Length: 101
Length: 449
Image (cartoon, rainbow over all chains, first blue to last red):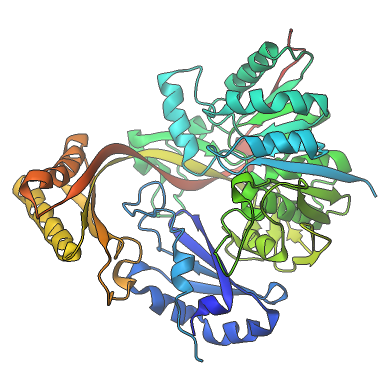
């Protein structure tokens, strides 16, 4: 099962750092997100796209996680050569993460 | 309990104009705020002002004001905006002239200046936050330095009776927090209240993003009537609690899900969202439904504000050249990869000096890069893209030229070449001690009709 079945996401950018929210559609699925969508798995999912550490913050009352990805934006919006210089698509790419069925 | 109604009329410089008119006409607002100054925008505005000393404010300022002022004046809606960009006083004069043309008289327009701190940081021994090193390392490449001001000067302008406050660089949520401080008399060190007000400002600052814009994912997250998306307003009480909603009958939706996405947007540590006004704490924020398209927000907190002002430094950072071309039909991926290989070799042959180059297939790996799963099925069309960073404009131009030359020198059936070359104005940050930043207000009163 894809993460997309359980959660939605939005990406923000500040400088060369991206942040991705992962928000459970149903609060009952939140513990599963906490257990399975770890910072390590997120970093591995993006592979060479991310040059820095990934930190996860938990917002249980919102059934949401916030991932902060340093060095993820090829220099940041003002100087990046990337087509999606803001990294706006990263959240959708993360929803492709495979969860245990 | 008294409540204040604050609308959000724009989430970025190029945003739609009609939703703000709708808010001014039918939102029963006390305030309408427009956030139009992205991270990179002010450095570009400084360049514009270098070319024309009367310019440097938001390019849509006059269009927006012309559209919104009649209803705002009629309904006594006060306006706060950072559309002054690199020239708040020029923006105030342009607003006054717009009002005059509309036959509106008696407006008090305040320009907030003092965010331009280029003199204070030039040659100063201040550290660059992102890269290490010092501001002085930027040398004569440094173009602009703007401190993120807080709510205080806007509050002062409102206290002096301003109907319209136009600023340059101000932290986005401070535009919305200022009217709350002014109306409710919140103390400048009541950190929990300022934190909750900052939560409200953060929810509103991207306008349509909290009313269903940037949210739709058909089948999973459906949003109706996006072409007539309504922009948000908040009904805020003196204790900082608020209801986020929109004008009845407008497109879009306000739900706990749209509010949650917007709360976390551009957030790092939820307990430490830094603004010039407060270190806001979003970690306890809760949303609750309060009727259709109405979401109640409570639980924001805060601790003492940061010691210094964050300063955004704009500097010249070389050039970017780019070219694109499309291939379609059977074998398009192989032809695209051949095209990329040809351009790579050509750039070496003709001696283009690039610090960084990207060769990619749009539709395959231009966004996901090496993280993209290998496709099983070939797409019906792809677009090649070559982009490079160069030290000279001439080299940047040559990158696009080599892609275009594939028309007669490349693989079969490439079409739709486009090319571009531009100078880069990049942004870095530093912190400046508070006492070295002096916000000030220029009041333009009693505009003659």
